[in-house]
Length: 372
Image (cartoon, rainbow, N blue to C red; front, side, top):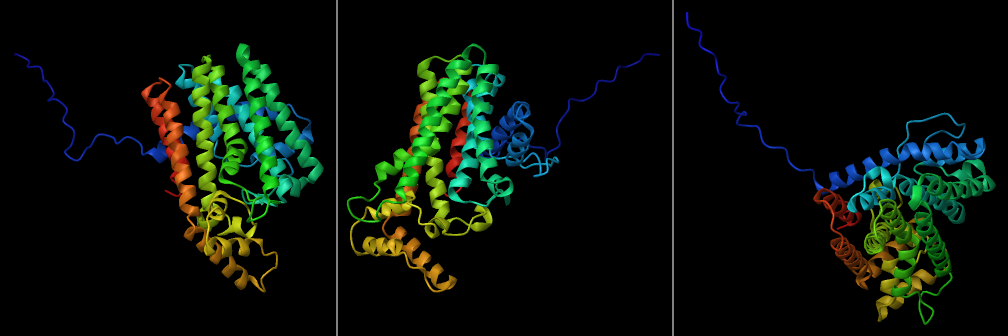
């Protein structure tokens, strides 16, 4: 009896089966920050565990890892943009993501140090829908917690950064100095007049935002590239790109601070106007001439409290409309677009794997996708 071997027919996929789609830019950006967060958090936890117990609890509370009594919680972490930029910078220059982790963690520690101290300076009682550190533990405790995170950042780079650790620490020191300078300028802007020769200029605002928001993003990228063994031109290009992304991000925040949907931002509509912040839309509108700009300056400079919440909202709504009429919103959108273009131009100077470039592009686009 002859046995005939059975040869199965070639596999043919069902007619409805389609090849998988590449991820959307926003999902790719989210995946990039999620990966960086997961890579960085163990090192962050290891560093914070070295602190004196009370300081460690305050720091862990701020980072979302525990309740005020120290009991652990399932936390919702922040955006992890700075760790993502550090990791991408290392990968862009041909190093593994792990090389960047001391820089990624250091940047995140400095960022959270600044948030703790910002909450004290601004008198903010809530962050991420729960009491801020100073509100929960007192001002003195919050100052100590912020100071501790700052020290940990440099200690981490010097202990875990290997031969490039000291150079990375130098970049972090520059970023921290610029961040403090930017914060100082922002505070001083509040005392400047709304019209006349002492008005805050658009150029002054741009410099402030590049320092306050862009410097640490640039520092994170520089640290990632340095820890990855990059030479100076590549370090500079990646840092410049990240700094411009910081400016774009701040511009978008300024737009959301006036016109953002509270359901999305978690903040009241026109909140920046209520606090009389000299954000870029306001600064750009104030630079205009004519009766509309003069009326806007009068509204913003009027220190009298309107009679009742309804009247106050009418004043804020009028101010927002005048800012748009003077071109303030469009000027802010245009600055974000131009900063994003400058960031892309800097990234184009760096030869990098296609997958890394795609993540950079998606992350950059996500910075402005919230309003454009």
